[in-house]
Image 1 (cartoon, rainbow, N blue to C red):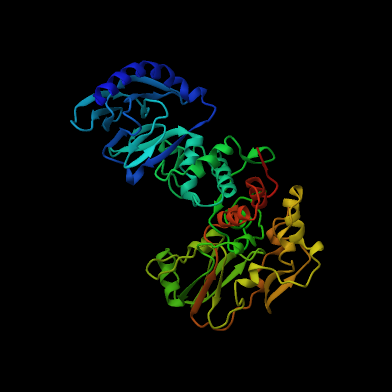
Image 2: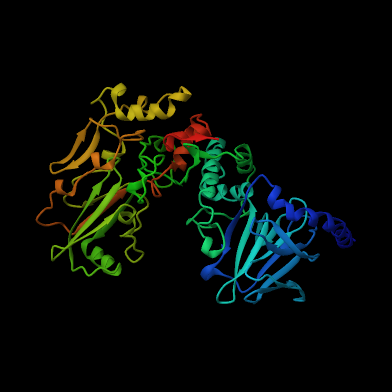
Length: 497
């Protein structure tokens, strides 16, 4: 009886729904986005869909025009269907249970679009519920790339639970929603050659539909709907990471392009909460480094010495390796974090914030020398850190962290070891700050006649150290700061709107 009711109800509603499906993508104020689910080496031989909400109303199928508006070719009342590539320009849609072919669809160069019908439609795919429509694109090998086509706000609801814990405070979740939304809008077309905007992995943002639906996350997204983080009116590329270990970094010190809103910011907030990677230590030998570098395609002989250089914020800047011929191999910026990653030797470097030192002859004794400036050496009112923090928070009448943690001078590596300077602003400076003014030159470093052949990698944090620290956001939210205050702390000179 229920099945008969569903069929009758589907028949009544399909006509109404199809007249509005075409307009949905155009009239929706919330822009649509294409998210790659299965593609490349993970492309599928076939793909199933099943209506998840209520009894379901079947599917419309067709293509999208150049404006993203759905053009319907027909309607299927089945609630469980399977898509396959039939030729380079055609697809079949069959009933999942019986295998009976329900439609043979010629799409030309366009992907097949299957639009689930119903009100507030939710659809099962690969044991995960999704909102929106699905695009199927034939690969060169005859398999299917599967793409979720859905409103941006629904996409953000499927990102935040996987990029930040659903148990985080509301204002932290709202800050994450602002970041994820801004990042998505500046990443449209990033995977354009593969037929979609963003992938569903950490390469872009982790997205898993409604697998972990959270009322708290949904509220955070809805309360910030349509809001973006902007610099000079333009939406920013709001990258973020789990934790920075004590300081974020300037964009050009990790990647290549300077960005005015991604500047180094001293971060004492993480110390106020439990983070997953508060500290970590790795060990490696010169012999292991020799093998790792060779595996990277180098022609090095035995590595006999290695040393690190650091940015003014205390994050890694460069790793230099010297072989027995005296030839050097330099890895800078993010490559300095990634070069030694090796499953064979159990080395994984979690963040840009680590020291790399000869185990027997360390120049820097501990990351704490960089984690927080020395106290008691400088008037807090004249501190560069104080000025930087106040420039971000003064508009809100907040108490700067430097009043809780006395500010001091900045540690710099030199020939005699660690020294301290107080004649420049560093963390979060609004303008006039370049790394070359404060960085550590290789010429200032003393290379000993011999090294112990054993090295320690001691660090804190998890991620690339650019933009918002998620655990820092958690701590700020727990201290009563708003989402807007959080993002303005981690992104220099931005507005929200």
